[in-house]
Structures are given as C-alpha cells and as structure tokens.
Image 1: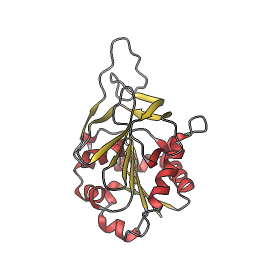
Image 2: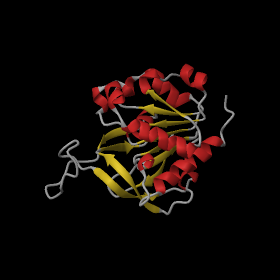
Image 3: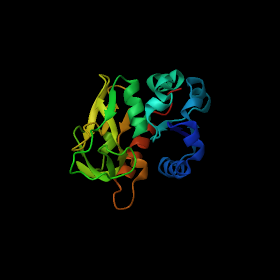
Length: 222
C-alpha cells in the first residue's frame, strides 16, 4: 500500500473532488492500492499500523499562515523521522522543505508589464500551466528525462532557501528550487505537479515511476 497525505485544510479535503483522480493516478503508477489521509490524521503510530512502502504529500491552495499544517507536531515528526520513502508535490514539497529548515515566500510581485496568469493570489507572479524545468544535479528521480522538460505548475510561493539537509536537483528561470532530495534519506520534493502530467508533457509520469521504483527498493524497513 502507498499513502497519499492531503496537506490542505480539512474543509478543502472534504470538498476536493480531484483527490480521487490523483489517487487513481498514483495507484496506476505504483501498481498498488493508495490510502488517502488528511495530514491531521497522520502520526508515526498510524504509519506503523498501515505500513505504506511510499508516501506522497499533496499540494495545497490555502496560505500556510491560515491553518496549522506547519505547526502540526505529529505530521512534522512523520516527515522528519519515518523511514518510508516520501515525495511532496507543490505545497507538499514546501511543507517538507520547511520541516527541514528551509524558508518559504512568494516568488515576487508582478512587474507592471506582466499579465496575471490566474485569479489565484492576484498581483503576484505565478508559474501557471506547463513550464520548463531544468535538472541541475543528476539523480535517479530523473532517469529517462531530458535535462530540460515541461511539467504542470500552479504556484505563487516557493522555497526561498533550502535547509542544510536538502540538496537542490532542479530549477526554472523564475523559481530556483523546483526539486530537491534529502542528503541521506529517500525524501524528495517537486515544486511542480508530476501527478498532473499529460500525454503532451509526460515527464512528470516518468518521475513518479522513478520514485516508486526507488521506493520499492527500500521495502523491508519495518
């Protein structure tokens, strides 16, 4: 079994119809059942009981200041100490980074001549749609991918500075931390959404396949 942790508010968790689509996508790529849990229901005890062999952390649309995800000690303990391979998408990537000492913030304000690509967080520059990302450090996560590829993006916030335990893997023109990994543990983050890849831009799918392959190699950690 794999675990998909929803990192937004509980209200959004109850309303999010797309979460089932993502779950089905993850099950297809992992070739295993996927359990969905809200972050507030996650603890080391829960992880030990269900024994997932991989954990994926969802994106989020709510500002972190508006709810307690970054203050939830049980969830933080899971991210920081459990031995299960993990990957975070967009907001989940930012949460993992924050738990390992990174700083977060908006990319920047829009310049006077720039169009606003979305009504989400008006006035801020956003990577929205399929944007190019470049690998800056070789890693098995990107096996089978070209050095530069397009992936789905939907964010105005970014990881400003990585914590000392994390290594930069990929960047884009406007967002330096597009992907990272932990220096010694199988923990990854992607600012982009590999779970939303499509046939025209399939490299997110390859990245998830690579992650699940890496995770399966770690089976037997309990």
